[in-house]
Length: 106
Image 1: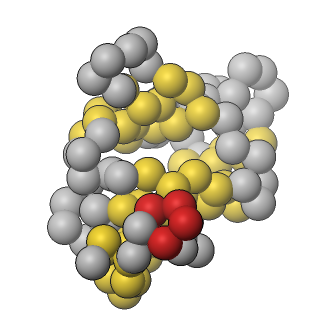
Image 2 (image 1 turned 30 degrees about the vertical axis):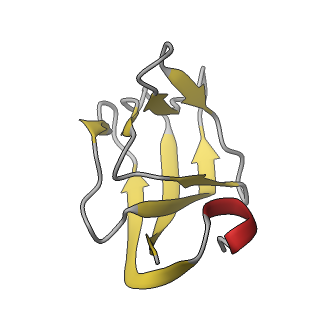
């Protein structure tokens, strides 16, 4: 998990989300995370798709949206309370399982 080399000094918030998407159209609209997930470590557990897979999308203020395609076992560390992000809508026959861990900078 995050260390001072990546995100500064952090402590776990004790909050974890397990997200399972298994129906066409499921996803998360663009949002900023709350105080339980100011630094969000998102790990891809499984992603099955018959066609082009959906992505995690980041919306940096100074550039076009960035699509992230994590493979199972990969993770991203995101300052989720300061960058707009979303999960694209699931397509037909697509399934995603992720877990997100909350950390608080100190």
